[in-house]
Image (cartoon, rainbow, N blue to C red; front, top):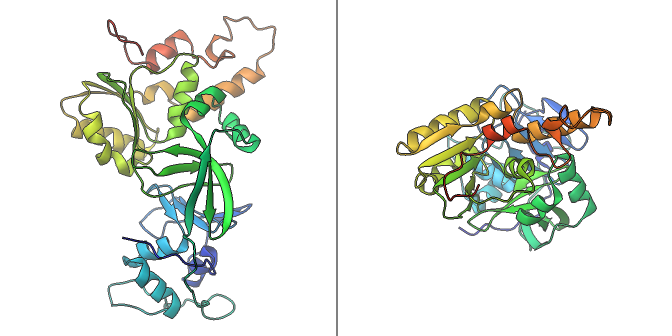
Length: 339
């Protein structure tokens, strides 16, 4: 289906307020909401007020106001534009764009008329080697080794309703991009997994590419010789099963939360012929591998130069873990197989 381009004359923030949906808290330039797309108790629906984009961390999806209306109303882009223009209710089973009982329209009255424009809402402009200081600094703040980032990421420039932005880009197998910067987390269509095929019988699996990069940063300067899969969202697990299930051994590095537990359980259920090894114990006490890496670096920075290398072995300058930690995080070596 071809998405009809449109002008972004309505802010997502105002649209949600018009429907009686308010943020649970706000920070500089964005607000966190309870997702209008599903039931939840902890806000994980982010609205970027500057770029006028939304991202649902629970679903691993995001986009523009148009895509949000398409999801809320379960309609195509033409119908979404019509509903935004007219504020009409299609049928009793849909969610009305008109204010309900007890709801008040946003200040200024009805939503302005939305008219088609000449460019798509989010469009990838170009990708190039990762060089911009802001992006390199962002990755550094996440503990990612520069050479690791350069090997797997690109500097992606994209356009949102006529405004140009740039972000760290991680490409998926379908040609879409996961996009990250200090202020933005999102991606371009199509959403898919990312796989690295080194013809190994062992594979490592991650929820997001930051954890994948963190794993490689912990192993730096060693290179990856086994296979890897990045889901780019836990909802993409079914898409990864054909690739993962062909491996006799799967090492799962998912988050230390309920979603990570369910994804690990789902992986075990969907790959009954594979040995699935849950590696979350390696970074227990931390949300994920990236958080563990950041904590490791912070601990190292507090260590004085008078402490011996033996005492500071868990967080050396090359970000290598201790031998005990490395044995936990690394898949077991097999004869003739490099990790």
